[in-house]
Amino acid sequence: MLEVNAVSVSYGKSRIVNNVSFAVDSSEKLAILGRNGVGKTTLLKSLIGLLPMQTGTVRLGDVNLTSLKAYERACQGIAYVPQGREIIPNLTVRENLELGALSHTREIKARMDEVFDYFPILPEHLHRKGGVLSGGQQQQLAIARALMSHPKALLLDEPTEGIQPNVVAEIGNILKRIHKAMRIPIVIVEQNLKFARRLADRFLIIQKGEIVTAGAMENLSGEVIHRFLTV
Ligand SMILES: Nc1ncnc2c1ncn2[C@@H]1O[C@H](COP(=O)(O)OP(=O)(O)OP(=O)(O)O)[C@@H](O)[C@H]1O
Ligand SMILES: [Mg+2]
Picture 1 (tube, rainbow, N blue to C red):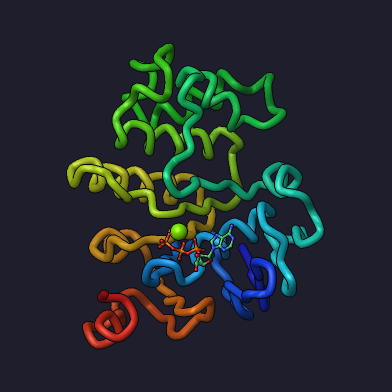
Picture 2: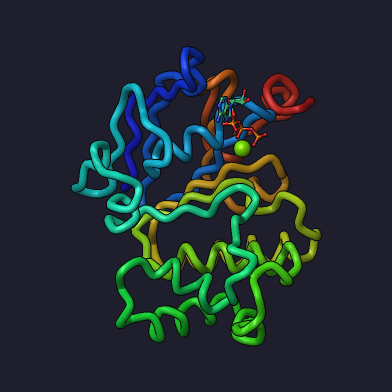
């Protein structure tokens, strides 16, 4: 279970995330929705320890992550797939994957075999530079890299951004398989509503850094979409 309680984040004097709370258990996939610039990425970065939280706590299972640094949170099992993928372009696919294994260097081979089961295109490209892969391949590599740590929770920031529709569908199917096999909470920030609907069980919507509505995915109505999501 991932538990986020009363998290607030500011850049200087401007409060970007305000008093956000939610919990996701291992049987669930939560979609965080909201228009551009409402604070979705800021929220995720604060949860993984890349940005300081002014208030609030984040817990993963029995462990309180709040006072831990980003690397320590990663070691506790919180994995992150950043917006824009952030593949290291000059490292090979293999080296990018190794980065995700944290300090589990003796298990790298076994971990790679595990992630190749989800992403069979990656072994074909293992010795190529990450930067030469297509956007869709880089996105798969970014998710695979996150899985290399054998996480206990997976956070993804707009994994479909700039990806071809056929690859988007494939990524959705892979994430479903990962969730079924690993039984870990998945939190996905998404602007692609069709994708979010197919993947997630629940949604929450952020506006100006605050949760304005939340519910089961089947209750995401046209009215709510019009009010909080359409531009
Ligand atoms: N490093 C920064 N310093 C100051 N303000 C920032 C910084 N990064 C983001 N912001 C501001 O914080 C607000 C929230 O940004 P954030 O990236 O979290 O939004 P988002 O919901 O992820 O948007 P998008 O859908 O475009 O990815 C925006 O107004 C943005 O301009
Ligand atoms: Mg963002």
